Image (tube, protein in one colour):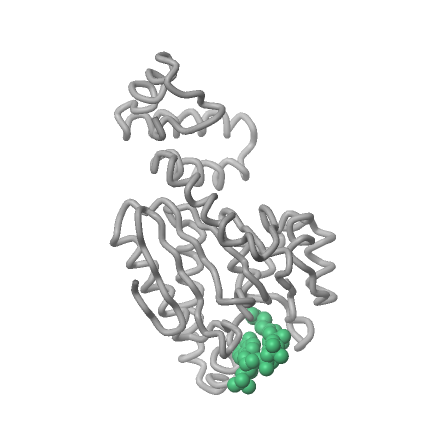
Length: 270
Ligand code: ACO
């Protein structure tokens, strides 16, 4: 277990969990916490071979957004300090969005502003049905910034993104799943078990298959179909080359021997 200011990181058996742990401030993200996030990402990369990285909060709070006092109010007349703080938050979020491990948000509760941005950046999001989501920025006279408008535009339809950005209406985990902001919502009492189940499923896959799936998805979605056809084959050959054709030699050979059914489970479980 590594501890950074406002964060706890555990890494075991190819899975990392970052817990935001500033419950007394509703897990608001201070500049120190953003710096801690960069260190946590360094530690996960240094550990090597991590397939899944989970981001979660404490009790009934996932994240109350940016720390409005320490991030905005206090450095208000110290622009260089504010810039440095921005660099720390932008830096780890950019890394997180393109992180090699599969990123999973396990949204246990309150998820406001910058919290919703983090949830959006993850590859998979599992929410407690009781979680409370909201974009509060318009309530204090601004708009979702720092990449949040981009993130909601990517993760919600136009009508949902503008509705929630303009009204700051709060919504629960069930609604978040209905509009596609999260992958699935489960009763809070089952959240830990469901997160563990998804993590276990991912850990049974090939590390390379997970990495390539993410990278190819992010690039392909902005390409034309003919470009994507060529690019996806090129990346498949790249994966085959890098792994010395493990999928043919090992996975498809096991299928030929009827040792597993690809539609039902990973070849690595056999
Ligand atoms: N930044 C800094 N401190 C915060 C934040 C925040 N985002 N959210 C809560 N806190 C602090 C409170 O100041 C309070 O500190 P104190 O005990 O030292 O006075 C403590 O956390 C508890 O907060 P309460 O308001 O007493 O808790 P309550 O459960 O009644 O309300 C709620 C929680 C609804 C989250 C409320 O605190 C709130 O509206 N916070 C702001 C949320 C927000 O708008 N975040 C910014 C989003 S925009 C962005 O991220 C850019």
